[in-house]
Structures are given as C-alpha cells and as structure tokens.
Image 1 (cartoon, helix red, strand yellow):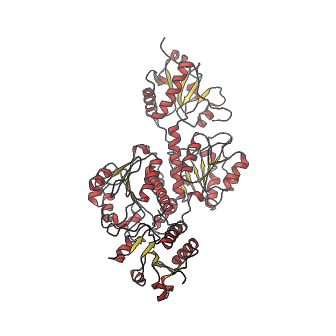
Image 2: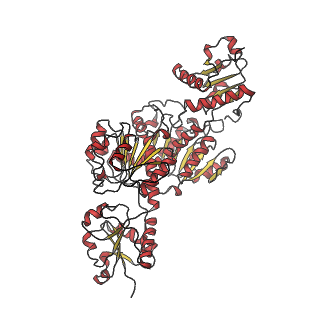
Image 3: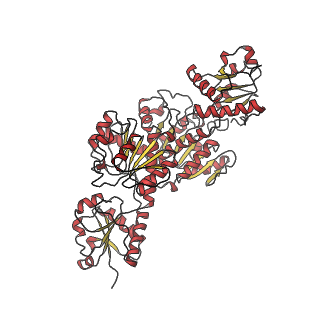
Length: 315
Length: 315
C-alpha cells in the first residue's frame, strides 16, 4: 500500500494554491501533495493530515479521518472563526525567518517614526526646510504588545537599536533588557510611558477591540501606534478620534478588519496615518515549506505532532 | 598671570553662538570662553587656541599667536575653502555619538528604501492596495562611500541588519564582513553591484563632483542613492537626468550645494527624491563639548594637539 496523499486545502485562487503545492512538493519529495478537490473519496478517507491556508470548513469535513492540519500561516484567527466549535488539532506556522522579517519591519517603521519621516515627508510637500530636535533612542520607549516569537524578535532588534523596550504578554516574558508587563494594569503602566506602541498580538476573543478609546487614552500625546497584527484588535473609529483630537501623533497600519482596505476608507487620506497593504511580514514559501516538511516528516516517522493551537486561548 | 581666555569664533547668529558657549563652558569650568569680539587686543594676543564653527577668516587673523583651532563640527570643507592657503593647525570633531546618530540615520533610510516605503507612500496617495515581493537584506548590497568614523559605524549597523556591505575609501578599510574597495576601478566595481549607495565622504578636491553621470551609470537601475555627506559631491543635474531616465530608482538627499534648499528647486517636487533638511547627523552640543573639552585640557596640560586635518587631503 502506497503512502496516503497529502491534501492542500485553501480558499485561495488556483495560482496561489499551485505556488504553495510546488514549494511544498520541493520541500517534501517523498510526499504527493495535491489539492483536496483532486482526491478520490477513497484517497480522502486515508488522509490523517492536511496542509491548509484559510481552508473552507466544508472541504475539511470531506476528510473523515483527519487527525490534524498544518497551516502555512502564523495567524489562525480567521480559520478558527470559520471552523466554529471543533476538536481538530491545528498547527500554525512558527517560522524564525518570518519572525526576522517581521522584526525588521518593526525596526524599519519604528525608525520611520523615530527619525520623524512623516513630518519631513509632509514638509517636503510644502517646500519647508526645517530640522527638528533629535531625541536619542535611549530616551524613547517602545512598548511591544505580544511577546511570542514575533514580539521577542522585534524586541531584540529594538534593543540593539538602543531603544528602551517593554513587552506586554499573557505571561511574564523573560528577555534580557526588556521590561515585562502583564494584565490590564501592566498594559496601562506600559502605555503611559510609550513613545511607539507596536501591536504583534494574535487576534483572540481577549484581544479583539483591546485598543479602544479608554486604553489609547493612556498613551502620551507624543505616542504613535504601529499595528502589524490584526485590524480588529484596534477599534478603528476610536483610533480616528484620537488622531483627530491630537491625542495620538501617528498610526502605521498594515492590517485592517476588511482587506484589501476599501477605496473610500478614511485611512488613505488621513495625514496622520500611513497605510500599508499587509506587507510587514510576508511569508516565505521556501522557509515555510521547509518547516511544514519537517513537521510532517516527524509525524510520518513516529506519529508526533508539533505544538498545536490552544483552541480556548485562540493561538 | 591668569590663564588666557578661550575665544569662540563663528559666523553663526548670536543665539547659536551663545548655546555653544554655554555648553562648552559647562564642559570646561576652568576655562573662560567668550566670543572673539568680546576680547581686548591684549587678551587676543595671549590666545594660542580657539574653538570655531565656520569662522570668518578675518576674525581668525585677529589672533596673532594662534597655534590651532578646534572645530565643533566634523566637516571642515567650508572652513578650508574660506581660509584659502593656510598653515593653521585645524582639529575637526570626531564624536562617537555623532557616528552613532549618523549610522542610525543610514540604517533608517536604508530600511526606508529596502522596505519600499517611497512606493507604499505613493500608493497610499493613489488609494492603491498592492504588496510588492520582498527581497531579504541578505540578497541586497549596500555600498558605503567613505569609511572613516561615520562610514565604519554605518557599515557595522548595516551588517547587523543582515545586508551585504561594501566600503569604498582612500586606503583599504579593515572591517570584518565588509568588502573593501579603493581607487576608481574599485569604485566602479562596487557601484556595479550596489542596491543602496550611501555617501559619507568628506568634501575635498578629490570628491567634489565625484558622483557624475559617468560614475552613476555604473549603478544598476534598481539602485538608490542616499547622500548624507555634502551636496557638491554629487552633480545635481546628472542625478536629475538619471532619475528622469529611470536609470536610478530613488535619491534620499539630506545635503545640498546651497542650504537651505531654494524654494524653487526641482528636488522638492520630484517623485523619486526624498528631501531632508540636513537632519541626518545632528551634532549633540553636550557630547561635542565634552570631546572639545578633553582635547583642550590635554593641550593645556602638556601642549599635545589631537590629530589635525591634513590640509592637502582636505579632512
């Protein structure tokens, strides 16, 4: 009996699926990776594992003996919302390369704010020559919300750039030189001293709408926000009100509740907002496929699953 | 006989001079620092050293027994041009803090280009949602022109950010992990592989107009230039022609032949140019004064001068 085929389940268009199937196939030459749609009922019955990218729950139900799925992405909030109540074992991508790329984006856009680029770009439009006082990174505090793989990589890079860095997370983080905050009181304490707030939290029932008016009011008026996590963590109307009132300096937004961002959205034209098209942490097909391959191969060899998503916690 | 007073000689306005005199005074409590204009002829005759910031040569000639001057700035090109033929010993500021701040600016604006910020900012104006392919810093080459204190600090930060880094300088530079280039052939070789060209050269007869059409033609069309050194190193009309022809992607310019940049200058409105108001390497009054103080104190103690500017070389 030959080895069961390995289905790829996704709501992406066919071209995107083909790209994944090719990359995954190169990383796993002994596996036969095909779209779920291309498997016979008999073949489906033999599948105990699938690789997924925003899978349609109805398609997953076509795999009666499925034990677990491996997502090629780090965020599984959308998948969990669509699946509803489930006892499926879900593995999300934990890719050190993604953490590095995301940390680089955090550093890049923190420096964008730190070196006053939005101000200088606005001055250029006005033909205005005016250098602003320079404040050293040693005298600026970056608050990182979420201290998982991405948050820790970002915090390290920010420390290396000489910023003061704090990290807020569910449980205390232990990163040399990073002040650790937990709980609502801890978050308030961190926000009160923050110049640059970096959101790298997973979207869960606990974090949805966490950054609302009341919470943002704890930030100093000199503070700016960078959201590289999920749009729904930040209450959009509250952000706009804070920016309009001058209670916040700037927001760099790479994620939105509905993507792509609608053409008539207020964000595009707000002078205190930088809009990015979900480009801060691009997944590398190559490194992601290598990680998935390693996890699948370990499972084939001895039935071991990687750490699975805590369905109650949501990540 | 009391110690000779220490004159401060500058063409800056009085407020700026007062700021320097205050900061220098705090760093040297045993010295009496005053504007040259406030010294009697007798007091002037006793001065063997002066602190300068773009000094008027006519004023310097009022100090008949002057042995050396200490500039509070790193660049002495303007001073040398105004002094003409001279045998004055000139010491320029070599401030590790300035090197750090400048290196941070190099990293910030290199990441600005690397993470496609000019493109995303332009897309925002158009309401365009489109993420571009990401190329890792390991696959991009940054060429640094000038490997003195500033260039070395910048190269180190760029290495830390995982870029491939090359350095071009008069003599071979020895920085671990940085490819060293010298001479015109070396410059051409470096330019041919450069994604981001960083200019940190001193302005001298050898570097004036160095970046002309012929030299820029060696850069790939994907390349961008960051000039944080002196405007006159880069031939302005040649840069414009290269940008207009699509032979270069972008230029970040912090320095111009005439500053402040004239309101009708083409740079302000060019979509491939980012104009900065000479803000990349702001001098810190505090650290600069501390360094000048140390050098003056050593001279008072045993007559030793710090390394002086090589007048023939120009820095």
